[in-house]
Image 1 (spheres, one colour):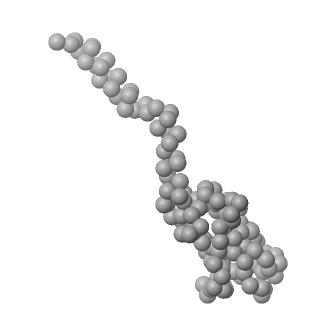
Image 2: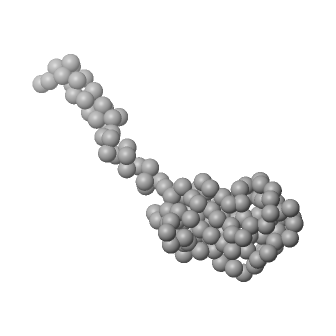
Image 3: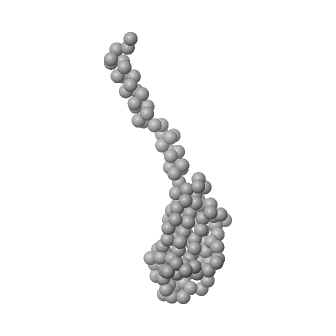
Length: 130
């Protein structure tokens, strides 16, 4: 029969294996929890300037353009056009939208991102045209 000291040492080894996962496991977890959030927005959030020729949102991760979008609305939420956003063929992290000519005023960019692993995020930001 093992001594008390041997049983404690064995239990301690088992606990350290559970509490100390391998580095491979730790490195793979963030990829499983990918959430594509905006990193670069043109026009920038809360900016004021001339009417943009294009609205561009670049996310932190690749997005699925079929399920991801950017939509431009008035500050009240009325859609500006029926134009659909598109993925950038040269950058899987970027969506673009070509708006119609914009009058002076406040606008909202509503974005939806779906990462390749299926995680969905949504948000919006405001910009102002002089």
